[in-house]
Image (cartoon, rainbow, N blue to C red; front, side):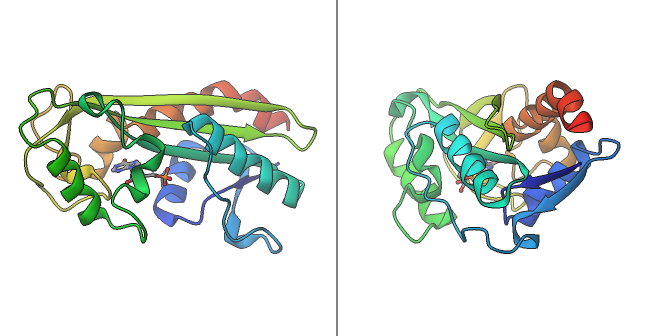
Length: 198
Ligand code: IMP
């Protein structure tokens, strides 16, 4: 069976290919299918809403089983901001350094540094059935950027139980701890029967 993965981000696709190596399942990237909308507007107010919206729209346009994800950072002292606005926290166009600088400004003098990454993955079937799974990674925001691996808020985020930021840890260690890694492994386990039978 063929599964459309609603992302044009090749870094994410590679991670998904490693975890979703299920027998008989062919993963197809959005840019390998013609006639799909270029971008789905992520205007829902939850990660689940955005992931479902992306999966539904591309499933409708392609007629294929479709998987989509949405993720972001929630900071306890900021009432869970930036949340669904993580990509464009400091405004458009999306800039990781500007987002990190804004986060540090907002947390200036704040003692409570608790934060978590969340990732929701949605699966839509052409007959209208839908499923979601979620993965979380708790940690804290440090006072200055450290490390050059990864992307986004990685240089400011230290996962619980560690001293290094996601941008200092190697990719395999980040995947074993991350919200996306947890959500993908959960999705592969929970949806295996659906996807292999299809
Ligand atoms: P999206 O799921 O690609 O829409 O991600 C939204 C935003 O959340 C990204 O642009 C990043 O700012 C942030 N984000 C999501 N996952 C991560 C991560 O693993 N590390 C750092 N930032 C992340």
